[in-house]
Length: 161
Picture: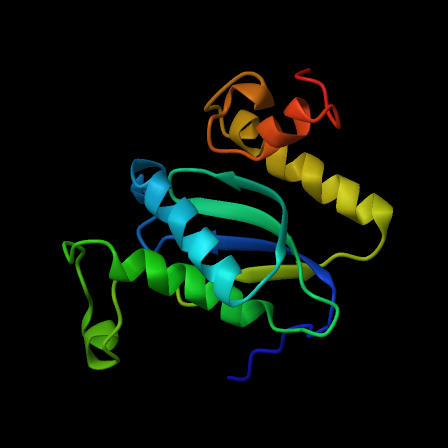
């Protein structure tokens, strides 16, 4: 099956990336490794990380690509690959993944939405920051430690409330 993605140079994308085993807390347990994987990827394939939240088994991010680049897939692939390579091999790996020499950490695909306009952008930023509240991890978005909301509060763009 052919999977089509919007490939727009310089565009902003809302991305969701899930662990294969959704009941694990791998991402928050290894948050420093995930942060390092994102930094490593940004050095090799630049992008602007506009907003992000990391929950135990998935993350959402809003990324803006350089004006001459339309490839968000290579960036997500690099983040996933770097994170996976740095973890010990303790996960269960099914036959299909073993045949393809894949780890059993991530779902194979990711979900992306091309941002279209300021209102759409603002709605997705709000969605990212409210996500841990929506899932009952915390009562206020500012209380979630694995969110870029802290950067916006620190620079005065948002208030803690």
